Structure formats: structure tokens, C-alpha cells
Length: 212
Image (cartoon, rainbow, N blue to C red):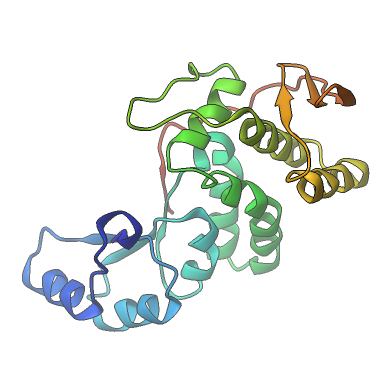
């Protein structure tokens, strides 16, 4: 159920009817941030009918309402972290799960700064896992968008007070300056901002379906 792409939101009644009538319909990918709908799905669909979040930032809230897991974009970059978040929640360590959700939240949002899968492909290309290419009619991220995305990745990988303050400053000024980047250094117009020290690429999680 992805209303942003289909233009139609599947009602709870429709999903409930399908889940009860057809044995081979066993799950739903719910990419819509209506937690009341998730509650109603869990309350009205069979107990063995699985609900998966279709949006990384909704995974933990939906888990608290009885969802099973996530069909994830961010797991291509942070598969171990997302798996640990789900596992910690399901084993009762909700505080650790919440902290991981908050840590990953900035990249959850940045990976949807443009139509999926453009941002995640750019991130994977930056880590030299794939080529930076998307098929038309999709288009690559702009240089400014790439700089912001990659900086968010690096802040997440090497989080510290200085880098977080720099990220906030970059966001504040992004409308005033044009950004471009190379593999190792970011610039604002011709003024040097900081030098990037390459970090090891995270292992890619080839299974985007992350559940129990």
C-alpha cells in the first residue's frame, strides 16, 4: 500500500477482506504514516497476517502496534543496525531500539530526499559498491544533494559534536550557497569547508526484508 506512488490508499476494510478471503495473501507492505490504520489492520486482520513497514522511519512506531518488520531502503547501508533495532524491540529492550531509531532517523529521511531509489543508489555508489547510475526517467541527485546526503552518512558513521554542528550549519546555509564535492573533500563555492577522511564501507545487507 503505497499511496504516494499509486494515488490510491487501500482501506482497512479492503485489506481485511482480502486477508480473510484469500489464503495466499499473507502480508502487506504499509507505506503510509497513518498509525490508526496500522492499529485497525492489526485488530481486524488474522493473527498470522504480517504487517511490514514500507518506510524506514515508521518501522519502530509500527512495531509497537504489532507490525512484523520492514521492507527497507536503509538496510542496504545499515542492515545490521536496523536488524538490531528490530531484535531489541522484540526482546523487550525498547530503550535501545528507540536510541537506534533516533540515530538512524536523519539518514531515513535523506534517503527519500528524491524519488527512491535515487538517493540510496548514490550512497552505494559513494561507497563504491555500485555505479552511480539510474535509468530514465529517474535522474541522478544534484551535486548539492549528493553533498548533503554523503555528509549525513559520514556524520552518522563518525558522530561527534563538531560534525553534528557542521551539519546543522550546512543545512542552515544550503539555500545561500552552491555546494559541490569530490570523493575526499567538500567545498562551498571556492571556500574550503573541511576535508573528508574516507571511512570503510559498511557491509550491504542484500535482503531488504528485515523481520524476526
